[in-house]
Image 1 (spheres, helix red, strand yellow):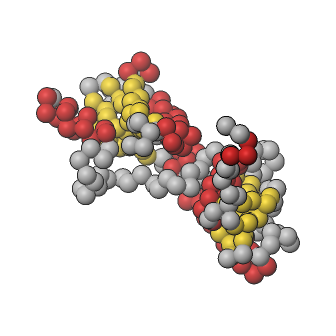
Image 2: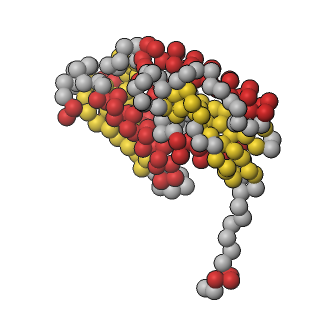
Length: 240
């Protein structure tokens, strides 16, 4: 094929300035977390938290609400500045332990696309597209919407006494942190997740978090060793 016949896609139509905001939770520790990402463009500014609530609960337990409040304070301060000045220049973080990261020029077809770029570049503990997992099953979910529900139905049909072992809430190793396991009964703990070809980065983080939760279930519910833990990841075909 001649090079002249190649057609490259057009560049994204919208231009943005974007930057992360880092927070040092323990002053002087040198550990900086990306807690906020923000963009500003011709149509205004967008500022969003860049750390998932589930990750905050896992790390800080009973103090998670305090941490979330600090992040909200940073968000509000930066949002007010960007809405007024339409520029990152001159913004002063409201806390000594927060700082603005590198401001970069970005192209995207929409604001969400620019935020996703910042998430991928700076925030491994976040996923812009992923809502918080519901604590209860959705009765309106179509059959087979979650593949683990099919497992639950099959188990209940053959071994009804095991049906109560699904969606078990247990206390984590961090005080004040509770999480839900996919299954815990008869000395076995199991978790269920997905590995979708088009969302492997996000699903990979989710599976790692579930593995961490599984490891935290040892010594509970009759689970005595890590050999009694199982992590199931359903692999979907692309487009499904």
